[in-house]
Image (cartoon, rainbow, N blue to C red):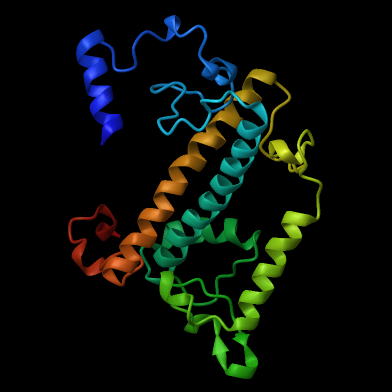
Amino acid sequence: MMAIIGMFFQDGLTGSAWGDWALYTASPLRAFENELGVQAPVGFWDPAGFTADGNAENFARRRQTELKHGRISMLATMGWQDLYACHHGVYHSGDHRKIARLLVSFGRLEVCGHSEWILPGYLSPSAGLKFADIPNGLAAISKVPAAGWAQMVAYGAFCELSQDQSAGTPAAAGDFGFKVLTSSDPAEKTKKLSAELANGRLAMMAIIGMFFQDGLTGSAWGDWALYTASPLRAH
């Protein structure tokens, strides 16, 4: 509340929402103004003042965390929407065939006709729990057995600890040797890395919004029956 009132006052007094950045020559934020992620329209944006001390080590640690959380959120957002849409037949058959060919390469199989993509078999044979029995969204948390969660935690720990991510290493900067989407052109590579940060930031907001909607309404994607005006209804 204090921050936004101060911004209003500054804007009204100086005619600029952020003052004239060129005048802040001694600001510690100058140390980070050319870093990845400083993008239009807000430029360098740190309303909470995390970088006010100009500490490069702290900035690198926070950037590493931001990048990691952004990547996880992008995967989570795509998985959340994809599973729900496929489970409820949102895609029409043409889309389904195209996307199925893509997902097969990631281990997802088309096994239930044109309306569902569910892995065959049992998630927990001992408990008689099939993959098809797992609901969408937050409701799945209580359905997955403890052993299943232990496996996921163990895999996450392996990913976290299997490579040296200490300061100064390539992994600390997010480079784990996965070069599929990179570029040999420095300008193009910078553009892609900036896009990754921007998309990761959006995905973090998106997945939190989806969690909140699910927790508030009890539905991972709202009630599809209410989307009567959706263009997807045409298919």
